[in-house]
Picture (cartoon, rainbow, N blue to C red):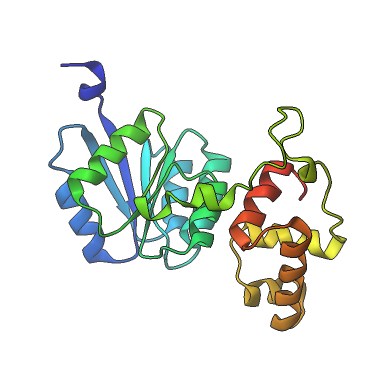
Amino acid sequence: MSSINCAKIRLSIVESCLLTRISLKHHLSKFENIETIKDFENADDFIASLKNSNQTDIVLVSLNLNGINGIEATRIIKKEFPKVKVIILSLNKEKECFIASMYEGANAFVQKSIDPEQLMKIIKAVHFGAYWIGPEHLNLYKEAFPKPDSYDLQNLYKKQASSFDLTVREKQVLKLLVEGKSNSEIAKEIIVSTNTAKAHVGNILNKMHVTDRVQAAVIAVKSNII
């Protein structure tokens, strides 16, 4: 048997629903690759445990949690404990949730309805350095990454060399957009009406020559303009 197959994984689960935690522990504990499974009701308790020497290789984090959500939890975990790998468990297929999770460092983004055996395969793959996304987001890459302006290797994306002439306010809105915030959440952050926030997002999309928020977020990250 190869060393990869024999590797033991210390797993943690962060999920607010007790029944879901019990179900995940029940199914995953049957696999020989799992050494230990610890479960937590919220991200704050899990992060506190990491600070108290909880040894975790991979954590399954629910997107919707009591307290800070899975995206914010991922940001904190990756900042303070970069060796811990994060798999987001979600009922939400929204592109913004996916792109924000991956931007903050998630190693995988899967649906909660996933078969336990498939989940275990993903856990093992992530343990050895892979990144994984579900089939519902596979087309995101083609949608999100813009078509090259040319096929000259030195000038593939001429437009991205600039900041797209975004105003200071538009760059602020773009940063919040990258974080996966909705128009209403952006409005609260910058203290404007939802309609004004929506107008800012529309201006950003026009200036960046893209058709949706995900494309804008990917270009913003890739181009370092926020």
